Length: 101
Image (cartoon, rainbow, N blue to C red):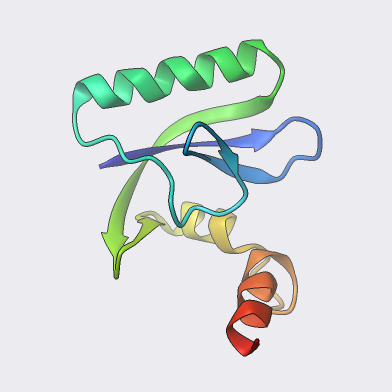
């Protein structure tokens, strides 16, 4: 399976294509299960790049774990979570505050 990722041009934040737009979390990214779906995501990414919405557009390997989409490669897991030096920063901090609520 593949998902589409990029960095938002306005602020550099890592984003994933989900539900017709760019989401800041990978959890519900649109999954491509076959070549036709991959081609569709690539076309979406190419248009968003051409429209100056995102840069560094890539299809990456993903899997579904516990009903949530997760990247396979360590580099992409880090992009999805945020800085590795402190868990109180980045996207992992936002998830922790949600869990604590």
